[in-house]
Length: 613
Ligand code: AGP
Image 1 (cartoon, rainbow, N blue to C red):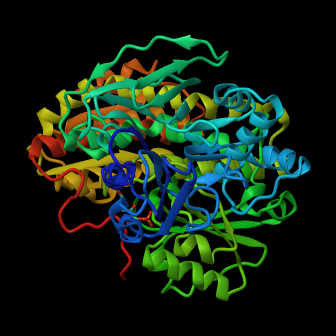
Image 2: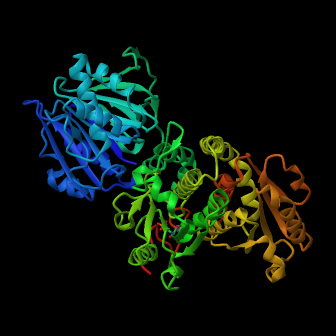
Image 3: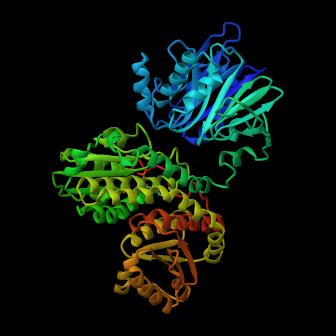
């Protein structure tokens, strides 16, 4: 996600803003920008730079080239519009009456852009932010009110998430802020008022901060901050003293980015769903895949690596059940060398968080060389795979810092579910009632994920019991086998314990010889029709001495007759069970890694993006 900062006070704003932006670099970004108002002339100076923040620092002589004590800054993680100087923030009205920065996603930006275009506005960028800024300008001029009025008029029309910092030509020495769902804090000191997307941005200047509530506004001046509600009435806020050090502040108070990102999954899933479901209808048009095209695909090929591949394995079960069209799943490094037979009227789906994985990019190019339609499911706007695929369906999780993927994996699943349900609907395999049922189940997932995370201490305890294991087995049938694949990879890659996922029905064909007294086996049983068979597989390994953990849905309490430790997940549509069953496995891997003292966020030998073969 983007980072916003701002300052107004007695110091030169430029250097403060650049310093605050540097504290948000860990969040990942592709461009940056700054706007400072000249105290004498009242004019705004805007400078933007694509790439690293150092570019902006060089362009502005460390911020000293921008004279003035009031300004805002931004690091951009592109969601709408390629990474470029033009799309970088701050954005402004054409007469520079309103200048602002934004972190979040304006879901109805196209509708608002069309409205403003009808009112004579022109647009220089592809961003949703420029639309928001010009909407505020429009209401400021239409109602001739205060900045608070103009912002309030805009907020009631904007759908989505936002943290905004805005300056108005007619109001020198003032910065206005507003937020909904995106983080925003304000700090005060004797040097002035500060704002940032996250505590690290302002920690150097003050530990006295205000956490702005949803749909609340703030007016920052050198003497302090005033808060308002949506009606424009002043509201009182209590300051909080931050006692974090800088490093823990970057992780939002969590010990590791991985745990922070596990906790971000409910919001990431909500943001991703909101991008593709409008008024109860799954709308994939922004990917460029129209309904006619989608409806005509007779086969899907899913190609990816690592956890993204595991998304494909889980998605295959879900999509085949929904659509009855065949779905093949390949590891990208295998696909590109097996000279695959690709049917026409099919779609190759490349899943990649980074959008830069060499094997996945090669697989994409192979599919394109064969004249097969390609769809990329990626998290990074402007990445190689995003640029080269015929169609792109982004996940909206913001930058994922930990090498072990969690929130990106979860939202890749969401995108695949949406494709499956939409395809099934277009092919007449499900009716509107069933579609509604699936959409309702999807919207319940975030709160159910939150529910599971709340119970994390039980997994922390169990992790302490198993952290000295030498081997672990994750067993499941059908979709539960796919879940086991990802649970095993999470465990391996951050705890360094050897583990493998195995189709439970296949154990007796050899691997069960490895089960010895105390061998840890994690049985996953979320699929009703396979539950009894899974139970007997668990009893099988238990009778050979295994130490058994079981994951199943609430209600299946008879599992406790077989296992040593049971974990329950809320009931959901069975094809969506992966999204819930994976959460305890992410947490278990995390806690085992912490117990073993391995580097959770940067495991040995691994990179966040594998750009080599
Ligand atoms: C997952 O935790 C790993 N970091 C790794 O398997 C990763 O999923 C794989 O390298 C694919 O990366 P991508 O999604 O960026 O293509």
